[in-house]
Length: 275
Image 1: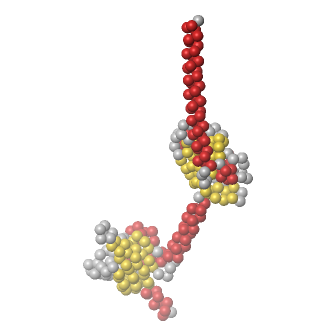
Image 2: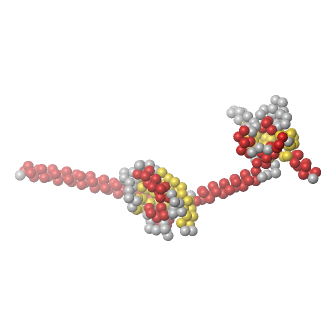
Image 3: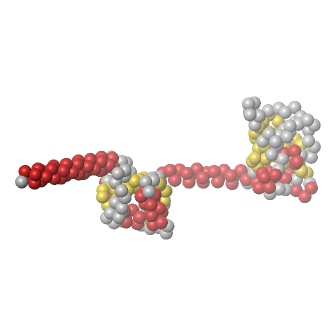
């Protein structure tokens, strides 16, 4: 009887130990999840937590506001925000797959839902110690894209203005190769702009190359500021008189050279005045 009683007491102690251990583990997990919830609620962007079956575990107020008019706050409503993108489901599946592998991944997608248009940066981050749990971070980056678009449009306008300017522009390196030229200058030389930038060298288009001049120079003494009038080779074997104002910038340590030049076609200008 004593032996039986002793054995029962031993088993009870073991059960009590594992129950206590399980309770502590559960308590620790709850503390970790509570910490995640507090971090999510304090975030400036929209935040969502899902399990391995894409069920919603938690979302913050910003995510709730993001889903307003779309559906109940959750993973399906998040995907529905990008219904304008046919590949949205595929993108989210890849993000989730990466997270389930323990990797954080992100993508920027354009969202157009009804009259609301915006760019959103979506990140899927695995939650350590919780298999299949994903922390979704959704941040509005519309302002960045708006700024980028404005810069791109201004750059395109500048390129269009430069290419159609009544004067030529070019820049060459230490080997005399063209690294920049506008369409006007290329047209005067009778060259395709892409070919000029790929193969062209400055002295190739000079009727007379100054003796002893470096490949990037227009004068023999290599001044940093070069203002000259000289003949250049133009279309169909013809020549034109060019007025060129060139600045030469040289890095003394690396030996790299960059020039900036403005060109006027004096032949065309004089013909217009005479007409």
